[in-house]
Image 1: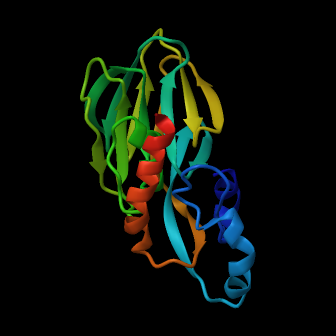
Image 2 (image 1 turned 60 degrees about the horizontal axis):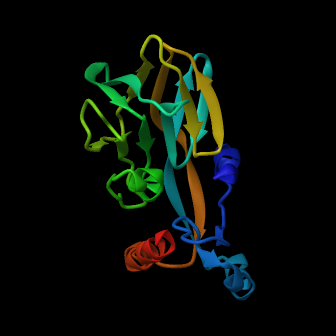
Length: 211
């Protein structure tokens, strides 16, 4: 995820190697790299493009591949006003809100009860976290959507990018999230439909590790 945010503006493809548990965005396991690398270097792979998000706060534009999360800084609920394309959606009283890409739909958003999107989809997921008041279900928004989030007066929150970059958000701070003009490029050897055949296996593996 860190590499994706760095190389996206350079249009450099990434070969993901799974050294962990699930590896939804990786292409090879650690023991498969050496045997497949010669074929890839000969140009036998293909490049998959994944949509990214851009979070705008003050004068900064911050990229994310998986998700942009606005959440409480303490063990308490936070009030977040959400607008879509300038229209008021709801004021959520929740632990936070996840804005996710199709890539992020198998991450934090999935753990919070969100839907899984086809990897090359450009739709955007809006999913509240442990919602007490407001719309508790996820929304799937069209690619051109612009989501504006505002922290209620007196509340403090944190902005998280891909779960790796955390920035404090003071009360009444606005965050705007939309699709980034950049995409992350992944080098692939499996066919695009491999996502579906591997999905059940990876989700079962996830359930096993959670037991």
